[in-house]
Length: 353
Image (cartoon, rainbow, N blue to C red; front, side, top):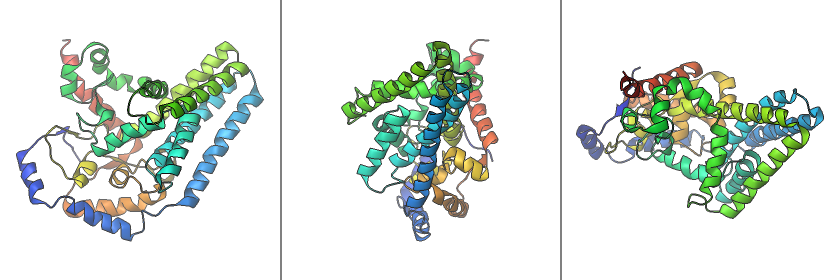
């Protein structure tokens, strides 16, 4: 199925939206999902899942201290990259109140997992991610497609200057190498955000972040020689960044961008800009349920194990309404995202000819 690169502002779409009762289509889907019992908390699932992640983290730390000053520690760095990726997914679920229905336990869990264990500000990331959920792939409102090093639309490419202009020419090729820096970028952005209004508890989060990096660097440089320590950090942080990027990039990259002035109801805004990734149980574990991105965006607080059943209901409902519903395999999803990056960078490459 072919999708437009951009969903433009369209007077016809505006009239259609005015004629439709706001949210009526989504209300019917929500009724079906609720009647299926898919919004109930799943405490047993999260106890087992978080327990497994905690065991993996404890085992990795024990192996680190047991191996001592050895190049075998690079294997521990690989394992920790996966564990950190799973911690990031756990923080994501806590932020969406998929684990606890109440705000306080969700925040406590989020601060401990994100700030202390992962080295990322929970408050900053939650603020950023909430804005993304409200307006996915909207050039002016979604922080995940704001022009920075990469450009996400031809309009952004036309305005790019300096480093983004250079990177934009080759961004499809550079995408995965740049992901190796994503873990460090999240931590740097977290410290920088402590001085902004996006972080409501800067003292608490700042203390937890300093504690994280004090323990992280303290343990690495006390056990490993300087060369091995730097290699360990490079492997761990690089693979962690690639893991996170491989989980989040397939969800929206390469799906239509929304122009300012476009009117879409909630159901269509979320479905048309999101992509599901097929692949079975292994992909479910690898992506932490975010492979059901359409359902996650429609029902952000839905527990992960319910997303598979919700996918069947949602796809059938979209077919009833004639709404395009896109899902593909993991490799194909990355291919689509990279194809989009190459396409929007074309004006920058053409300008050099």
